[in-house]
Length: 134
Length: 236
View 1 (cartoon, one colour):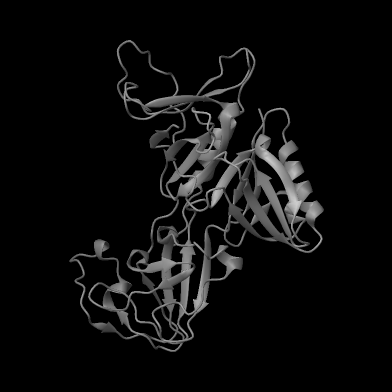
View 2: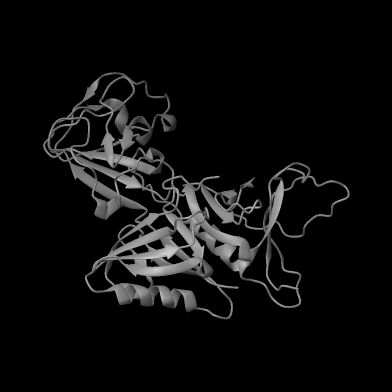
């Protein structure tokens, strides 16, 4: 047994289509980068082993700031930081005597009847999940 | 379990430029010291607000620039009526109506859809928010090396996220002779909290209140980020 966390992501699909959900060992995490003021992408080792393009999980959150045309402060929140920090906590949260199944975000709305619900839904700041595999 | 190293470029940040002519194109780019490298700094959607301050009452605004139409009833109808600009006043214009490339704004002139016709000495101020590749984190295990490329520049190399043949590089500009301080900063970040593993804020260029691990012993003045693939190159 390798005592590490396994990170689970699922979009709002029903786990019945390609890239509806994915799970990665925490040790396969390569890094995370903001892609816009509303998205952070988390990258993992690709499935095909070629190494030139990482697998990505793009997480959407509230806009860090909204455009201001009336002199109001354009600075709002650091929600991207919150998402990254919580991910880090989850990725490093492995402990002995647990199964280390770690839900980063699960947006499944109606799972198939033969599939039990996952007890945790993950980061509350995340509103959408898009999984890319290579 | 391991630590994760967090970096954020100078965002959010505001930067200003004073026009030296009546051109609608910014007469020089915003400063690298404020916003980082200007080459390829093209993401208009990362500019959350733009204001124009008139030094001498020159320039021509548009009546609509003072209002947010959606919040006014009845809705303001755009017209080409010029707005008298008072000396020292500041006017806000919609970033979405402007053009932005390589650190230079081209301001939409006043007209039927808003805008502002610039005058000599007008001060353009833009406000950037966190956007494409402006904040990032790496697991400590991805750290490959720290290299002094000059007495004022130190590069921190991480295994590429893309995983091809080029490292992802974080470049720090700092006071001469402070390479060892940058190394100590990275070392301390890597080895903090050895029993549980956390995200460690190494450099956070938040507007005016930049924070550093170790209280900026290296006197860092700028951080740049060059992932393999360049801007947007890693997007899947």
